[in-house]
Image (cartoon, rainbow, N blue to C red; front, side, top):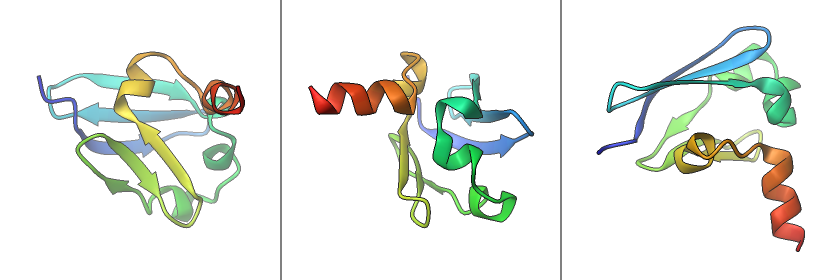
Length: 82
């Protein structure tokens, strides 16, 4: 099953990611402080890859696998420090 992202959009509180396989994921922006604090224009500067989303100017990478597993940015940082 192809879980590559095909589009992303935002509202005031959430990020909505559509996957190539037809699934739609909604996550709270509070999970990703860099995106939460970014300007709307910065959020739109997303790059898609086969495995996730990348914002170069924000130094933010979000994997689809992580989103599907329910991992927030805070959880990834905690695991990386162990």
